[in-house]
Length: 383
Image (cartoon, helix red, strand yellow):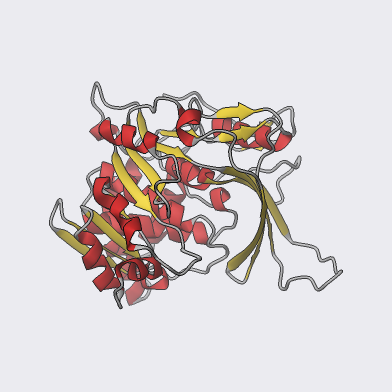
C-alpha cells in the first residue's frame, strides 16, 4: 500500500494534488514472482505550458490574454501519467535536465503521480525540452524547443526491469534508433503494445510494419492504418493488420474504434461517446493505456474498447495532455452519475447498457481513488 498524500504546496510553490488510496485493477491477476512493473516506457519528457480559453489567435504584434493556463510534464509523460492514474505500476525511463523545469517534471511524476523513475537520469547543463500549446476550437497549436537526449535510450535505462507490458512507438528507421531495451523487455516476457506516428514524408513505408513481428498489439488511427496497409477503409486496414499482430485496433475518431483479437477469436466495433472536445492532446495515450489495462486484466474485447473509448472521451473534455488523463475516481464519478439516471433518451439507456461491466469495478473503488491532478509551476493553479 502506498502512503497517504494530501493537497498542499511544496517549498517551490508547486501545487500538489496527490491520491491517498490507489485502486489496483490488476489485484486479481497478481501472484508471487510476477514482474514488479506493469508498464515500462521510454522517451522524451517535455515541460508543457498550455493556454486555453482563447477565441482567436493574436494578430502580428498583438497581445491577448488567455482565460486558463496549466503546466505539466508532456511527451512520453502523457502516456506514463495515463497508465499510472489507471492504477498500473508504471516505470518511466527518460532524460531530465538539471534546470528548474526538469526539477518540476521529475517532482510531479515521482511525487504526485507516483511513477517509478529509477531508470531515468538527470543530466547537467542539458535543458528540459519545452512545448507551448494553445488549445482552441477543439484543437491545439504547438511550438517546441529542445535537443536530443545526451545518451541513447538503452544507456539511460540500463538493464530494463521485468514488466508485464511495454508501450512504445514504431520508428520510421529501426536501424537508426536504439530499440535494444525493447528487445530485452520482450525476451523477459513483456507484451509489446505499439503505436505509430504520422509520416510527414507521405511515404508510409510498409517496412515500418515489419517491427510488428514481436508485438502483441498495434493501435494506429484510421488514417495511419489505411496508409500503411494501402487499403481504402478502416475495416480493410484492420483486417490486414490482424494478420500481423494478435491484437489489432484501429481508432477512428468520432466513429469510435474497431478491433480483432486473434488470441480469443473476438471482433468488436464500438462507437465514440458524444462529448464536447476541449483539447485532444494525449487522448490517444489515454486510449492506449486503458486498452493495455483491459488486456492485462483479461477483459473481453468489447469491454476493453468501450473502457478505452470512455477514458479518452473523459480526457478530451479537459485540456493539457497529462493534466486531462482520468483516474479511477473520475471514471467512478462518471459511471455513478449515469447509473443514477432513471430516465433519458434511448441513447442514454444504450450507454448504461454498454457500460454495465463497470458495475463489477466501481463498487470496489474507494472514495479517495485517483482523480485528475492540477500541476503548475505557479503558486496557484489557473486550471
